[in-house]
Image (cartoon, rainbow, N blue to C red; front, side, top):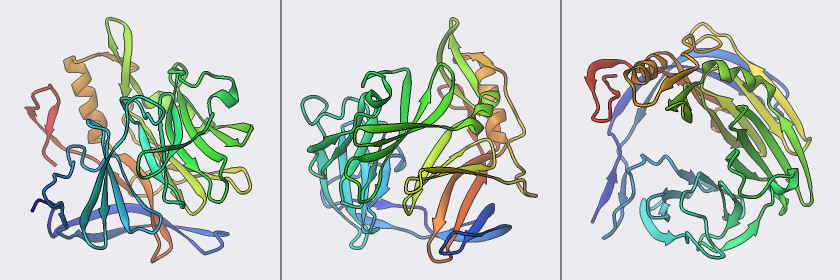
Length: 329
């Protein structure tokens, strides 16, 4: 029998931001506090199988009823389904890399739906699948705004299927050349582009990685999203702010905070570019991570409030094999 072991009895004191909403979400109260919490040991019975933990559950999601955990192995295109009540691995399902049910060679992300299906996204992919890896529907998100399906100039970082509407999805994209973030609300054969202008300032916090003058990536900022109820929450790692998109009213709201613990933004802003795999790249990455990094918003259903964690790291002078400094805390 093979099991997953999570850290046992790990106690952390974290400074965090949370704001509480009433059931009608008409009012919000902003508070800063210190919260102590613990993480208990969890063991999952995998039988004669091995559970994929190489990515630390980076690509995983919980079913809407919170009874199942889906964990995706990007190396082998395998979805693992884990029963959270019985703490047991139920099955492994292989997704095709080619053919009519293909998800391609590299999946960017997936999410569960209220119908117990999976929406998946990557370059050239914005589709819905059954749990047995059968493609149920393609959503022509990019085509609806005049771009080719496989256009690599824009990257999908989220696909959200609106509850109760079979042909409606909300997709979050970044346009690489301009660092422009935007939403596409696709409803059948109609679509709308929703701009996210507050994220324009993320350009100030991003550092390009260049190889012989050619762009190869960036670090220093990121955008993440989550779903609460029927609303899409979109935040970033640099500024203490949030976008809330409500599909029902098709409205976009913006919130920001400036508090005593983490302030309104990360302080350090790096250079515009560095040479890839150079000492400067690793020094700048270290400076970024030694400052605050804001995480996604989390919903606490029991107390009806959102939590947002921010963290910073400390480093010694010892380095990893690939050149970056080893974290010491």
